Amino acid sequence: MTGRFTGKVALVTGASGVVGRAAALAYAREGAAVLVAGRDESRLAEVVKLAEEGGGRASAFAVDITRSTEVAAMVEAAVSRYGGLDVALNAAGIFGMMAPLADYDEDTWDDVLAVNLKGVFLSMKHEIAHMRSNGGGAIVNVSSNMGAHFRLPGAAAYAASKAAVSTLTRTAARDHIDDGVRINALSPGPIDTPMSMRAGETREERAERMKTSLPLGRVATPEEIADAALWLSSAESSFVVGADHVIDGGATA
Image (cartoon, rainbow, N blue to C red; front, side, top):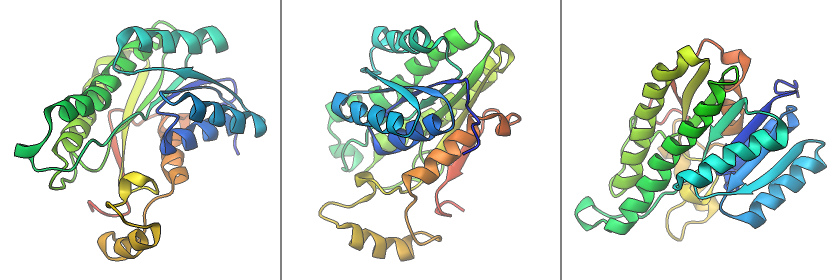
């Protein structure tokens, strides 16, 4: 590893999920002190344990990102524990249900929009408030190729929320680049997570399906998405502002 984040403090929301976990561990391996945030405390504890076993520094913070007071406390925890906040990866998200729009459950719609969109808004709001007063920083929001780039029948809430995240990211990037806060989005395609599997489908069946449904012929590994997130939040991408970086094996090419 290059030590690109040595001396930096990183915050990862959704760190109890597959992509957030991979990114949190990667930041730790690259030298950052990492606050791993999410709802599942047992999974967060496992991420912290793995980071420390690899020689990194990490601690957990349980949070509901739809609640502003909890998000503010999350950012404060990163600052109080490690002395600042340089990088944030907002990876928390849920899929919801699959149903035609006219049959979509309203409560599920509200939940998906609350986590995927309001959660990103609140996370950025509090992250930026600290960063712009303390020398700037870099933020990456995990969106999706399903949304602004691609649609799938039955996934209206998820697609709408992720399209909104892509647009919110670009707007925030223009709002705050003069504050020294560089903001971008990452839009993955299918990843090796349960979300990419159809009901009742095995991993082997998914692999066969992807051979013909994706140009690259396979799903992404969580580590490939984490690598892209680290690049977008590192000095290596210092001229990248307000981008929506699609990484989907050619699905939307």
